[in-house]
Amino acid sequence: MKTPTRSPTHEDVELSRLSSMGLELEDIVDNERVTIPAMTELAEDRGRPVSHYLAAAALQELRVAETGPLTVRVCAGTCQRWGALDLLDHLAERWHKTKTFTIAPVSCLDRCDLAPACEIHGAHGQLVLAPATKQSLDDALASLAD
Ligand code: FES
Image (cartoon, rainbow, N blue to C red; front, side):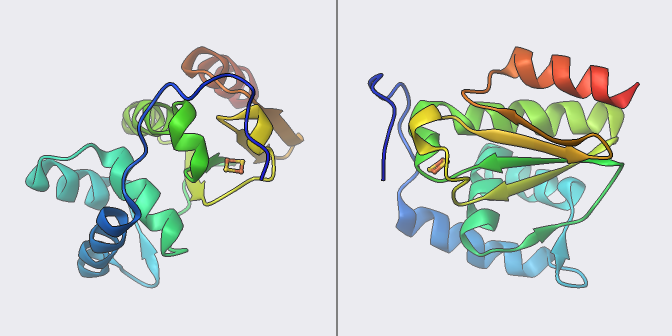
């Protein structure tokens, strides 16, 4: 797997921890899906960032309930070392304000050398943001929502 030539900027969550968080998610699976509000509540209860549960959901290949016309696929795999968890926390916060998009965490988007990688899918087709930033996600979501 290729990785960016830039050094990692973040620590990733250990796989064993993500696996046990994945088991916690089983309690909130509804109709084979998890919702962002339920995940946020669980994360607050456990005192962990919601991004960790989103990364755990990616590992378990759990589907996040769909909301709105846009889907943001976010790599929560090795891209964690280049800030993917920050992007997921940011997206979860934005989701609570607008609820106009679905957050779909995945284990890899095959753009590992351009980490952190995201794709926004919708009627426009696919917009790739790699490397993505909070700002580029905000700008893209705002313009695609119009
Ligand atoms: S690890 Fe492959 S795109 Fe993130």
